[in-house]
Length: 242
Image (cartoon, rainbow, N blue to C red; front, top):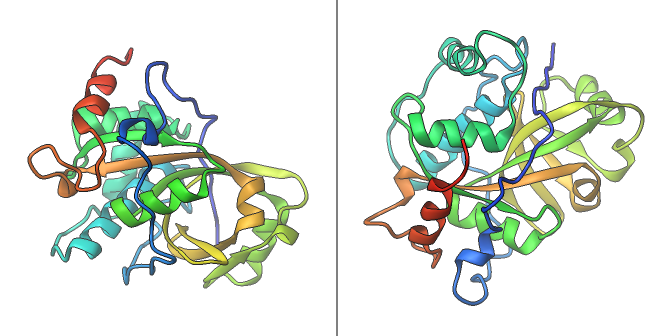
């Protein structure tokens, strides 16, 4: 089976703060664990195209729907690839996660919407847990090492495990994966249509960026339900240079 990457080096736009800045006081404590939703994820073209940024956000929308109990249809593989190529101007170039989030916020994704988004410090595990619990997924970028791909290729059907022992060898590329669950030992993320368990010491090596994405489904009358000031966050987003 083929596996492709496609997460380009990221950035945090000037004028956008880390998520806790938009909360008055400390963020609420997340529960000790969040279970992975029962979803048929699908590859969404990431075996032939570097569209992991597009696939990762669609998988996040799927996690939202599973949590809210909404019965929704989602774009198929061809539609995901078409959206990706439209965004990139026809080039299989990958995406910068912050720029892609801005595009979806402005333009939507087959009827799905992003109301707001904010960065999270990669090593801030408490906030990462908060995001997964509050918004059903964290949209993340990672560095993939040769040893991690060995673990995947030895068990193509998944699920997979990435421990510190797997973070070895040459860098294969940058990759986007949504974290959709966690417990005391593992982060659970979706990649290449399956679930991968990431040990926290491995995450500390491979994580490159984390984004909280507040979808339209999770916003009612301007309230995210978890104390984040959407007015302040959306004002900052509206002032970002395009």
